[in-house]
Amino acid sequence: MLLRQSVIRGSRYPPLMSVRIGHGYDLHRLEPLQPEGDGRPFVLGGIEIEHDRGPVGHSDGDVLLHAVTDAILGAIGEPDIGKLFPDTDRRHEGADSSIFLMEACRRLRDRGLSIGNLDATIICEMPKIGPHTDAIRSHLADLLGCPIEDVNIKGKTHEGVDAIGEGRAIEVQVVVLVNS
Ligand code: MG
Image 1 (cartoon, rainbow, N blue to C red):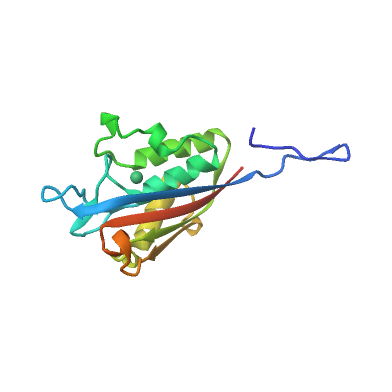
Image 2: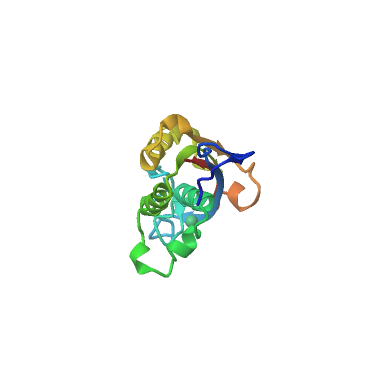
């Protein structure tokens, strides 16, 4: 039971609002687009962005949707995305990652919970994320069924350091609050 009741000195109070936090993390390699490399079209938060490299992944490789899905699953104490949707399942080959997020949201609603707010940091050298944050926020808010004001997206570089800084990988970190 996520909902709790407060009992103070024998007086029964109405159920308190239950607030839980979840953290999501994901990283995908970025490679030249198929067929020259293994990169899929560069899609982030369901928005396709033009770039000469793309994520390597079993599904569409949407690193933001994967991290958001894991953050929600984490907040409600469910198995992570890799356990719910293993990359050995051929049904998910090239799949639109919004189906993973929709399943996490269904499990969230089944518990009488909804998104409070979400904050995501996207770390990559290229492409620049700033011009796309409004489109990503809007689409993500639609998927989550919450106001756009509750979805925040920040783009950062890795200062040229390591695989991310060399444009060979993209990383996302997400925190989400859910409440009843
Ligand atoms: Mg992933």
